[in-house]
Length: 376
Image (cartoon, rainbow, N blue to C red; front, side, top):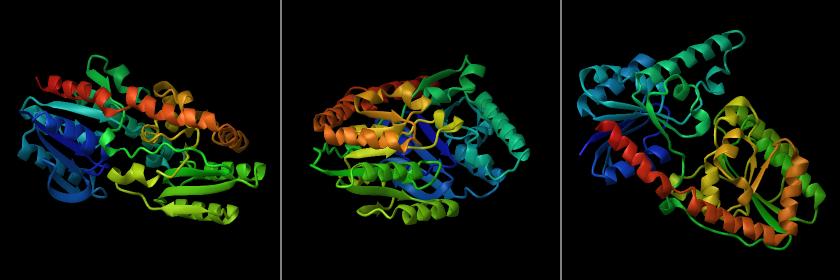
């Protein structure tokens, strides 16, 4: 039995990838598994996984590093899986004392735009370069890499090609999926958006497409399902202005749900959307809920991102679009309405593609074998 420790700053201890998939899979192999997060406060044991987490994300880097080092010293892991550069850097001390594999699970684009958005030119360039160097330093310390997407292999996989790595996507486990394949009702449709209500994530593009749809087919009964919320004050203001501008009827707004109930929360939806803006960072980040929508049997309309094109054959169960071309998006929705057989075909294909390609059982063994091999 090996001792495996997860370290994460920004993710909660019950993060879907860390807790519900990776940690549980390693626990099922007979390992002793522990998770430490710095963005939520909880100490205890959940489903056989030890949790020691603290809500100290706003504290200094030094204090966060000391917390991670203290946990490493007390747990004495054989393998540490880190989700951010600071977590990786915090393992330097224990790495000098004992043989331990340090695995950097690269799931976020680093540095992200939000990390430098508060800096004006030229300070934003300086800080972006500083964060980039931190990323390289974390890559140097790590012994192995896991990449959530192929597009996130740069720069680490190219600068350190001798370090072993795997690509392990965000595929869902079927035990967390509520399947509900719909049949379109005549002259009615329910359109769904989940996540952050912000301009960057595409809520404005979603509303604009619905507005075009209403103008093209005024008699169509459109229901709008929103699940999520605004995290920042400027996003809340932006969303309020959208609601005031469009004044849609039949709009239902639900709060963000727990991971276990997420797919049930949008079960009434006919089509699910992600129309985030086209920019360099988004092109390298795969919107992972596409796999959950597919598993639920929902056709999708998504921004045409490089990361999505590389990893998912969306044509089988949806469309990739220019998020700002509301007219074209409205026409795609109309095509489903006017051709119910196409809609049913895409809904069935979504579930079939998930079962064949995009579920956790397809990649579970490659992940656990990679961790096991890193320890031996």
